[in-house]
Structures are given as structure tokens and as C-alpha cells.
Image 1 (cartoon, rainbow, N blue to C red):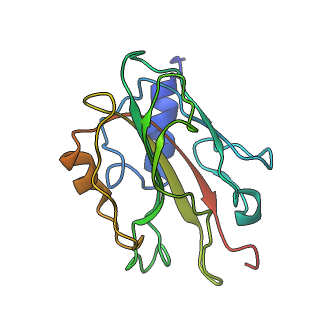
Image 2 (image 1 turned 90 degrees about the vertical axis):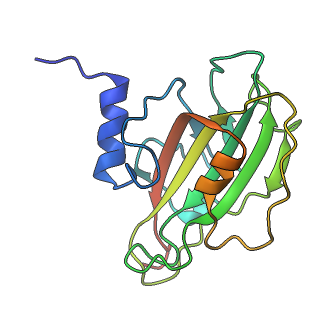
Length: 179
């Protein structure tokens, strides 16, 4: 019987929920675990379900930095806006934090886009909320201001323009509380 590794579990979850290869590269191997815990006690766990009411407040993020001298960028996107069947507004930018130190402390980091909790429209199916953690090319990187508009965010261009290296990811599923 084969040994199930973290990498196999990670890749399986991302393929099952059609996150890989569109959002996360198919060959991606995380170099750190990204823990996302909401004040409600709910924790993102590679595709578990969390209600919008349980994820409305900014979560606590922890990770073990693979490079103690580096700084990191965190982003949260919903590719399913307004729905997975008609993602004309996606990816929707829910949160962007830059210059996170190896301690993972967000209070001293730069918030480029304030946290917006999930708000899937009524009568839509499941939405995927994807957290991605990146290593920055240099500490105290100066990032260009983001537009006020959160719809149709070209996060891939942001990653490329800023030479960010994906090192960790996590996600959860949510749907409108009235569905």
C-alpha cells in the first residue's frame, strides 16, 4: 500500500475542486503548510465547507517560513464570482497582504486590499475561496497600489509583475447561507 504524502493529498484536493491547473499550477509542491483559522473557530482544510457567517472576520494565518530572512505575500481570491457556472466577475480579490515577516505576524505587514469575507450571491452553487502564500524576491518590497475594483482581478499578472514565488496554499468551500 503506498504511503500518502502531504503533496499527494494537496494535489488531490486541488484537482478534485478544479483549482489546479487554473489557479494553482498542476506541478506545485508546497514548501510550507498554510493554516487559516477564523475567529469563529472554523479552519480552512483543503476544501472543507465554511459558512459565510463563520468566515466574515479576518482569519488568523500561520505558516512556518522556509526562509527566515524573506518576507511573504498572502492573497485570497474567489474565482467563482458571481457563480462557478458564470464567473464573469472572477477572480474576485478578497484580501492581499504584503511584506509579512517570517514570524507570520500580519499586524506589521502592509494590507494592499482589506479583508472582505465571503458573500456568495443567493441561488448560486459552491464558491471556492483560495488562499495563496508567496515568497517575495526581497524584503520590504514596494508594491503598486491596487485598484478599488475587486472584480476580475488579474492575480496572475500581479504575481508575475512582482516576481512572487508560490510556496503555500489552502482553500475552503462556501455558499450563500440562504441556499
